[in-house]
Image (tube, rainbow over the protein chains, first blue to last red):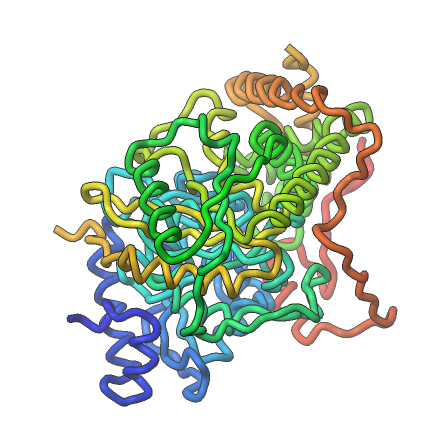
Length: 477
Length: 96
């Protein structure tokens, strides 16, 4: 077994027992990146030239990682996969990265993503697409496709992504790794380049659920620099060997029963429900009529409105791509933004501007905020009747790289199973259930707010039955 | 059709975006499809529903209104091509 194949727990334990050194781990991961990166292109920037010094006493001492390129890294290029940020080097670190660094983790690179996290294929990047490490003709999912692909291919044992409407859970499922979208407010968003601020949340990818626990124990917690971060909520992610689902209720969503799923996903739903039942859980049903019919429209109305506001700041004055020969400020802004943003981002900015204009604001934006209230209330009612909701991550298996649906709304509808979680600020675990041929199949377990720790405990029970994913081939011949 | 291409172009310019003819045609289709999808909100009775603000009550954290100098102004200024001394310098603001 090569060292890069070890999961996070095995690496930390092996390092503590001095079975191998941090520099051996570093070199092994670097070689793996060299071998796979030409085929899967998971990274925008590599930072593995030489091994840096690190905190040798930290919980993640000497453990390599990769973080999504919308997380600010002091003095190191941060692009959000957009031309408009150019070679911007932030003057500060994102809190989540700062915590990893303080814990001794070593950054191997910044991961590719859809531009400003807008997309679900990792194909909307100014740096070109990332390919799925299980089959390089397929997409890895997005927007955190580079972070998921890096863990799946064995570049690193864990990585960070961000999830605004499924951007951790969907690529985790497509690449065959575990991904957690934490409760909104559990991980500081300070230093995360904003897309939809009321929806964005940073979370981890790993090849075991236990490893997700280890990362969450480092990155979660209150931060004075994020006003949506909570100070008095549970952040205990220690391993609970007595965890059980006996007597717990796990619900399927009544309205989703009529929706078509690809056969491997439908099969995984049946198998997983049976496992939980055999473990003593009660399989039940909840009704989410507003979620099933209105969540997609509500989500995109809000995400685009927030994106339009958040992306107003990119004007070429203080950082990134610019022009030097504009005759006035208006011309400068127009030229910078028109050439700096990609097509999907421009479309969403225009849509967001349209929805929030005074003449349309009440009809669209305000209406969407009210629909969001109904969706949050619906989940609160549902979690009065059940402990977890089990559902797909996506209705379909990953598509081909470069395939674009002519009707954007159809692509957005594929996010139905993930985006309601963000609208209600809930935690969602994307977990591996097995392989269909060469491709991994993932599902999703959703819990009530602040149940992240129990959600991961249940994820470990599922992993014990379903098995852990193998390291993907990574396009190596 | 909810918006004409002239109206979409006007909105784009408000967002400081200039679109090519091809981009504009795509944007018109995109926005109109999107607005069509949002018509479903009309099926709901939203009259007495409060707009969503946050998933649960959170106290707005306040801090003293006091200037705290940033440790490394140079790192900020270094990233811009429009710097004059310790300020950003922008092209003329007044239209001719």
